[in-house]
Each structure stands twice: as C-alpha cells, then as structure tokens.
Image (cartoon, one colour):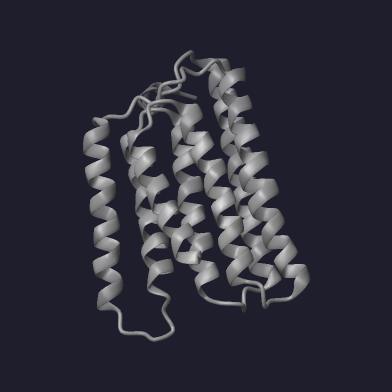
Length: 209
C-alpha cells in the first residue's frame, strides 16, 4: 500500500509540470499532504503515540489545510495572476521531471545498503530536485514558495524512510521550518505587492534601497 502512495506522489510531481494555474499547484500540494498522511500512518505505526499524532497533525492540519489556505489568501490579496507562467513549455517540464525520476531510480540502484528503502529514496530525491526545478523554471515569486514546499515534502519522506525512530525534536524542527519560511515569504510577497504591481522574480533586480 505504501508503494502505491509513493507512486501516486511521483505522479503528482509530473502533474505539476503540466499545470498552468497557481491554484492547481496549491491543490496538488494539499493532495500531497494527504498522501504523506497515509504514508506516515502506515510506516510509523510502531512509534510513540504522541509522536505519531504529531506527524499526522503536521500532514493533515498543516500541509493539507493551513498552507493551501495561506497561499490562496496571498494570491487573492495581492491580485496575483493565476497563471504559473513558466520559462519553458509544459512538455519540456514533464520531460525534465521524468528524467529526474529516472535519475533518482538509477541513483538508488547504485547504493548498496540493506537499510535503505529504495522506493522512499527515489521519491524523496525526485521531490527534492523537482522542487528545485520549479523554483528555477517559474517566473512568479509565489511559485518559488511552492517549490520550497515540494522540497520539504521530499525531506519529510526521507525522514519517514529512516523508520520508526523519528524523534519529536525532528518533527518540531520540520514544522517550525515550514511555518517560518512560509510566513516570511508570505510577508515578503505582501510587501512586494505594496511596492510593485507585478510578482515575477525578474522585477526583483529593479528594487533599490
């Protein structure tokens, strides 16, 4: 069952490459939160109940509900155009993300470690590099936030792959990292909206003290 959820997670990465609208990106991030909930529930069932509840709350409450709501509010408040406006075509994006997934699979096969859960490793690395690609290939500042969240989802999957030893401190660190990053970047986008009318990264070079 876990492998099926991980495969579906990879499909969501490909779907992001096809998406044209920001709200589609947000919906995919919310769906990834649900998938992470299922993966965590299956894999971490043997850990302390308190830690398990924290992880499940982190995936459902924070990743699936809070972050999508926050991102939608930022888009509406700043009247950001709903199109993602990538630098490259959707076809090229799908090809690149597919290449990333294949590269991750080949990389996993070169690692000789019985403790390594290869499926988790492939999906985690694919998510990390896809997030970096989204950041590099999209014009809008808000999509860079979304790319960072995709990277964080990859880190979360890699943490689950460690097994049932995920400590509460690591969970707290992940949660605070997301919260602070999204909060600061959201404030940043709001302030940019007070100064300039566009929200593309290209205009940042025009800002002066």
